[in-house]
Length: 203
Length: 193
Image (cartoon, rainbow over all chains, first blue to last red; front, side):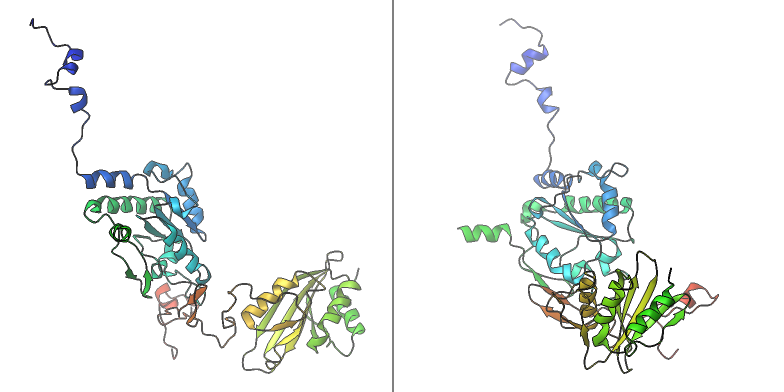
């Protein structure tokens, strides 16, 4: 067989040839990192706007601060389609169980950002009517200081949450919490059914 | 055009047995209605004859330790003549109730619900006397002076719960002075100080 110079097009047809087109676009990684990369760059928020912090949350979503630079512009008003609940504002006792119900309606995996002093600790409301921190009823991943926090602070919290999501060993556990988890200073139980348990129940 | 004081005198002339002499303080006129049961009659006369067609506010005061304990306050305004008049009536603790004025001004409906919710004063004849801020089933009236600032522990399954707020030595008292803020506004201050 006569040898000819291998042009790029003929290289593609040889089974032993080095395909620079394919090889050049392959990235070797771990499944953990890949899945976490998918997850952390499209954290869809559930905007739980309860007070003035929600105004700053809206500012974070608008053009000047532009939360879509971090993949979180899709504010879902349905808990079924959200990944991260941003509790922005004062949680009163009248609202507390509704917040918890919405958290429980969110699909796993799910995260919570407590935005501002009120959501984190009750803030200035040492009062009969205000829950002293949303971590009494739901597990919080990131707390944001401020009254209200500036949009940059919320974006910083989002970046911190992305770092946290990026570190989660999801292929080892394939679940976020080992169920059921005792949580919070009030000892309120939060049920988190793991995928393994669901599988067991199905079998 | 009649002044607020003139209108107050006219109102008193219509109910000479029920209303004490009007007092004026910083240009605001106050009438005290002696018998809370007569408040709707006085209010209806004030609205229909004297033109006080708007109820600005309806509130209550807890004079804890005094008898009578409650003071219910009505702020009246006439949009045509622009005059403002305040009515006050004292309600005893054992009674803790008076007739509604929601048939005269519809806005009194929610104001009376708030007074009922926060103070526990009942308004007889009210069309819908439910709590307006706290939830149905909450057992206390939190703006009463004998209700602790930190709240009380309650639980109503599937509806709401409350816990005592940590006051950390508060409530905090600010002392007016030229001292630095750490001395003027201490994190906690002993009651004997």
